[in-house]
Image 1 (cartoon, rainbow, N blue to C red):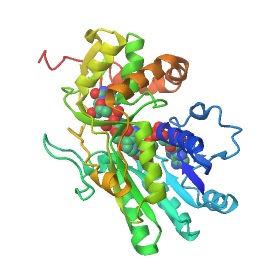
Image 2: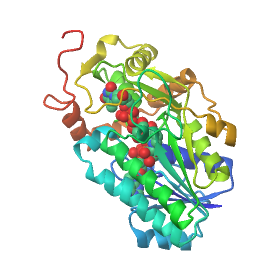
Image 3: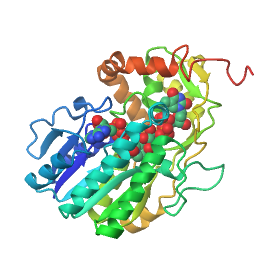
Image 4: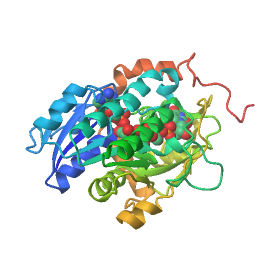
Length: 347
Ligand code: NAD
Ligand code: TDX
């Protein structure tokens, strides 16, 4: 199979490309725009790989995509390309709609024209909105996205469904919970906290720190996507989760303990607007229909991840010394949205 992977220079896409090249004979063309989150260092060592090619470009560029699908005899598309950070979507929503929604529609249109045989849309549990203390998201939970990011992904899911129903494109949608692991951009919770702790900087915890996320090691997510790509049923949605629910504050304290850093580095900061309280995934469908289960236990995956960020300091230091600095200041600086203020205990 010849696979077009989009967004393969990002966190999950780069992990997926390494896994597929390592464990199969498939050929991969990686189409990535190289936005702030795209980083060719994530794919270092693959440049000369005989079954891999990188192309810089936008998923919304129909002519480019159509040319690639023909020239490379692409059989399947796996669409990771996205703007992926909720906080950025609150400040600048438009690009989320442009890439996540309209970009996906462009890709679907070209794929349908060329009768691509498999199309996997990498969606997210955030399309379901927020849970209370009880229950888990199933594939039939209502779509109730709360952030512009989640709304742009939910819109893409509905367009994917329409391309299956109306044009017969064999689209499968995956909805996964929070990933962690090597090569995650250090704006996301786990790498941000590890890097700050290593640099003795404050760890900004939003609100009361009791928001719950269901963590999955990136390799487990990639294996689930591979299953869906090979054996998923067109038109179906598959939830993917790690069975590892944790309140943010507990996660941050665990990280500090493992890094042997003091809890006094924790700084409670103003909450994210529209902050979803809890995500939890019911992944029984992919387990029973496709035989997938997460392999990596949270404690083990987290320890491995910490080791990676400690050993690959230059990878994240380079990112943090560049354009990302301006973003950090906007979010966490003195007049930023998440500027340090009184802690919940103080008020
Ligand atoms: P990321 O931000 O690390 O990577 C996104 C990649 O897409 C980058 O390489 C970027 O350059 C590329 N890109 C952005 N706009 C593009 C465009 N218009 N054309 C081509 N390439 C473009 O994101 P990630 O965390 O690896 O997430 C990948 C996918 O998985 C996203 O669709 C996201 O919604 C989904 N997802 C992520 C998580 C998570 O926890 N990170 C969980 C569930 C689902
Ligand atoms: O500085 C921070 N402090 C903090 O308390 C940051 C960056 C986050 N948080 C909280 C917000 C969330 O409750 O930690 C939790 C995780 O935050 P993020 O890493 O930003 O992830 P989240 O908003 O849950 O979304 C992630 O999972 C679903 C990915 O970024 C999405 O791409 C994916 O779809």
